[in-house]
Length: 191
Length: 241
Image 1 (spheres, chains in turn cyan, purple):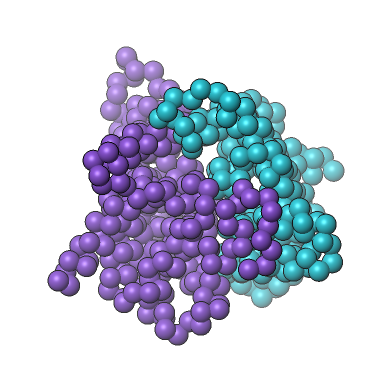
Image 2 (cartoon, rainbow over the protein chains, first blue to last red):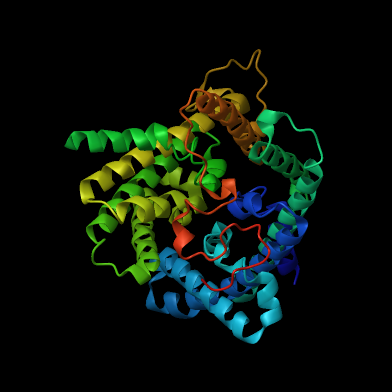
């Protein structure tokens, strides 16, 4: 239990996936214009990473290890993730329309989110068990959620400010990310 | 005439459509590995190798791969090449492999590679595609090098591991080689490019607009074809395409 808690805190805040590992920068910059869409994206990422870290660690432990094909991990993981996202999208559309309404738009974007593949590969590198992998995946995704929602909140405020013309647009967003990253460094002493 | 195509491709990748400065593609590795010049070069060159081989293979097979499954096919080709590069680096450049770590397998999801595959290699003959890969790859390497040089110089007073600024008068601004520094350097790069863009537009030669997720639209992204969530900020989804 203690290990799981440590993994969760470490992945969610200490080594925040966006602000210290630079994974998932694209949606972080692209989908953070308002809090509502940011929360939708964050929710979709939690959903997909949760499922994908479970499925990839199952495949790794029960198919790839017995067959000694661990070296194919990159190829297999990216294909599994792409297929999984499609499958989840179809399933939600058919069976859980309300959830599809709120997450559907974001699901296809997530295949390209390097955080999903990054988590799957980290789980293998650190030889986590299946339970630890799921916890690590969910915590990483929660870290993403925190970062993107905070970012969206800040961007809504920045809209009202008088930003120097040269820094308008992406530049001021990156400066904001820099300051958030400094703030998140405050967690680094925790573990 | 023929040589012009190749030179034009090289120039296109290095200058006109430089992936880092102009198109703003592949930002994840750009931010993550530019803590030093050496890491930047290592990442840039491994991406170049994958890019050139992927362009070569995809251009060779462009008539064989059915249109409906071309994205998965490209991904398999790129992922196999990345695996090969990963093992070669692990065997021969182990310290660099240690420094780049997770970001080597993540070359698979680098939007430059699938972007080029989709927009150039899948439509053009083999040789120009190879040169396109070389140009783009070197452009990316150059971009990573510049960012790496700025960060290494300010963060530790070194260049390629040699002490350039004497520590007797220069206090290294360590934050530049840590995570926040990456965002800050990139912010200034974007700001500088904004100025250059404006000047170029005023001179009547506008630069190519950024195409990656940085610009908020997915037009230049390699996944654009398979991705139904274009213009990601619209909450009202268009549903299945």
